[in-house]
Image (tube, rainbow, N blue to C red):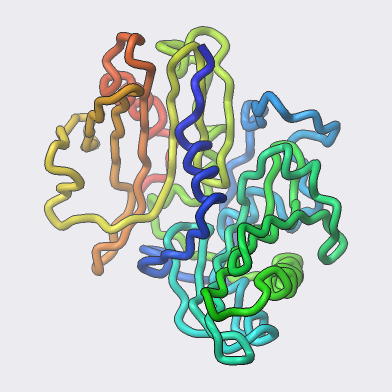
Amino acid sequence: MHVVLRFRATALVAAAALLLAGCATGPGLAKTHSARRTVAAGSEATSTDPTVGSTAQPNKPADPAFAAERLRLVDPCAVISKDVLETVGTPSRYTSSSYTRCSNYMKDKAGKTLNVTLDLGYSLLSTEVRKATKQIAGLKSVEQKLNSSACFVSVVTQEDPPQAVRVQIGTGTDGAEPCDPGRKIAEGVVRKLKGNPQRYNPPKGSPVEVDPCAVVEKADLVNPLGTTPRAQSFGLHACSWSGQSAQLQLDFKTMRIPNDLRFNDKQTELDLGGVKGYAVFKDGPFPTCDLVVVRTRDSSGSGEVAQFSAAGSKEKEFDRCQVAAGLAKAVLPKLPKA
């Protein structure tokens, strides 16, 4: 049985409903134009989408400006800067819900609703790349108009694995045509990315620059995936490995860190070799254990975590939290030290 990846399913849900919700801006990450640390991508960080038929060179961006190791540090809110948004209306407050996502709930030039969300390094389906017959700023682009008030404009920045700069536009019930402002913003975003975009200044211990596919070795994945697990990158900060009826996943992300480190009422604290992790088992048709390890936290309670997940179909018998903990123990020593 081929297991449908949970993270991919999340991406598809996002494409079906215009996700413009935001929270705290850039948790724990200051901005800078300083030099970057990089973690080189490994050969395993490639797409395993069975529909991929591209002859493009793996991990080869359309322009060096869109290389994953560069984009991981780019502040998306700075890329949809005031001058970019003013081409289509009046900007408002910026909100960011992840390393690579920023939103602005603004007004168009007629004073009507114009909600904008930018995603950098967005994982496309290969079918979307094949439909990218338009062009924006010299790059292939594809549009998906869900209804009269919602449009996704994706500028293809890499074909294998497929990635894009994606602009989501929501105009509400009283708004104008949504794809036109999406194209204008996307063109401005590409221009900014090819220049000198503002970057994060990560605190010590931050995993923001780490390639999650490259930091995991094959030896860490044998059980319960078998000897030939398939790697799939999602965006710039998540990677999943799938085998027969099972899946492992590593996700670096920003979130609020509770003072008492109580992320879930049902969590179990695990010792990962001098580092504490907080595991939650979720039952269901695809039982999963999510193990959260805090990497950074600032004085306001915003921070960054590494989340290790182990999942498998109901009939697949293995200790999911034990497997997630094993993956964490293998990976944590390779991450930046606090």
